[in-house]
Length: 550
Image 1 (cartoon, rainbow, N blue to C red):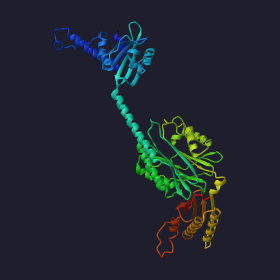
Image 2: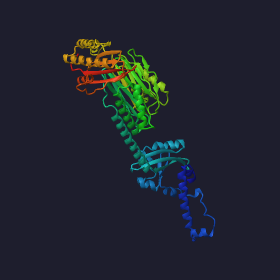
Image 3: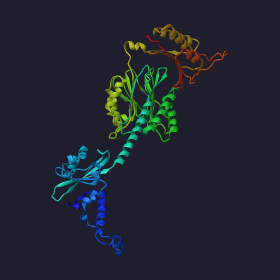
Image 4: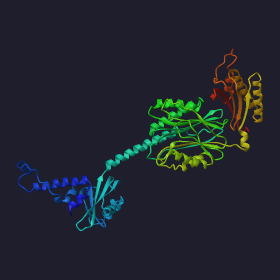
């Protein structure tokens, strides 16, 4: 068998190793021929020992000394011609002359036989990387075609032990899996375990972490009931991946809930969040949309920090994008955010989402949003059904390369008996001594028409009287009384033109004021106040309706 033809086809590293091994063998043989030691000969002559020609190297002895596993099979039926000592030590003695599928069952079980045919057909080496063999170790197999004297082809098989590398890679993958599982667990634990369900809205949300090859991001959403029938809705996305992004997300979500209790306008909430995000990590930024729904206004007031536009489908099926304003992401600092609004009347559906739902590497972002608009136009049913349809239409699967969060809210159109459970009544208040009696009479008539029990009727009239008296004493025109009932509660609200927010305080026995808010706080389930656009304020309280109230 001609070694020149074989060695010319070997990979470079293996070819050099073969040459060094044969050089050692040949030098040893030549030294044993003479009576003068080789060291003595080198002393007597200054010339280096002659280098043998490649054709003179005994191939079998070279391959026998190879640390890699080597086997040679003849074609076309792949009969085993040779295995070296390393191969025998790994898999035992193999009968030469037998078909490789029988003589080398480990290669058959590893699926190496088709690779032999590919190497012969193409005339190029083929490699099978890091496969675990029956001996429990991992090998990388290289099949190199060689030519023989009779013109038949043969394949030289090299198996390099890569067990240490394979085990290190598996340990790294296991570590990455554990880190990802930790991040997913943290992410899910920081998201709402159960969404709050306001009286006037129906809401559903979904979260899909990225596929196993993608690190978990910092997507989040939340629903916060503000009292007085109003609801805050939040969705955001922390830039970055892994546990750090999830931890920052948790801090921002907690902060949003705290700021929401102040009942501030959306742009002021984002202003506070921007400063907090900078304090948490100056190198971490996040996008966010904060929106507030007021059923009395039929609108969604929102502010956006670098986030994607809210989509709203009205009762006719037409889809509209929320317009600007959109400021830079949270954590950039120095930007004054502003609020916008979009109609969300009865029968409307709104969708808030993160970029994983619409952003693809091979298409423009606007195309993704346009596709979502088309999907929303045809998505009907409950909020959860709409959520699932939008996710499916976007092609989100288990191996998706980014996190996805979607929040869907519907303002149902109340009809029939259901509409009787959602009622509104309002009265413009004129200053003067007659304002309080008129407000009490109005409230009494409305609550009677709504067929409330006597005790709830009396509490509602008392709360109305105290709120109106507080507004007459401390507020300025224009003043307005509004009563609202839902299927769960009675809400009483008084607005005026003064932005000084009342607070509950302890009135001393000699004080002539300071008892109104204390009385309201005592008899009502909840109460609160907020500033209104234009420099005024609203003070409200609510009573939980007993079961069976209709």
